[in-house]
Image (cartoon, rainbow, N blue to C red; front, side, top):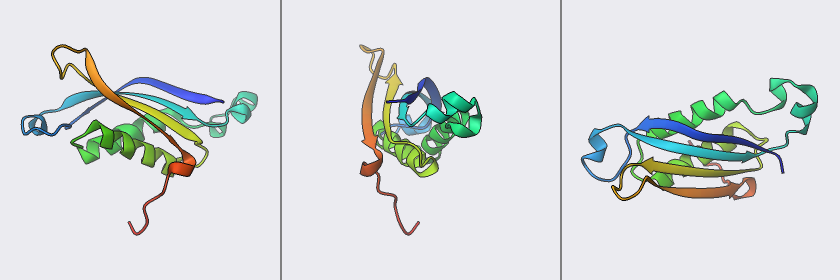
Length: 126
């Protein structure tokens, strides 16, 4: 299966459950594996035949920064929903979000979600 891979996307944002965390900007590190058909782009060599990587990164960062989530689990869901909504050609998304240096004994802590288009239910009435 074809995939676009984005590794180590740094998003500086307010994130966390504790009062002190809500007062500071912290980095999150995102890794995305986005399954989509790349055959047409591989033949045409044209940007309009693939997903724009810069746009994927911009949307991912903006949705997290705008939400200032408490949990990285929620941040991941917001990114997945935004990308499915923006790019109908996406078949599935695997996203990992790590919060570096938050636990002294660990380089980072994080989560991974994997969602398929048929799992996605766009919200109505918004």
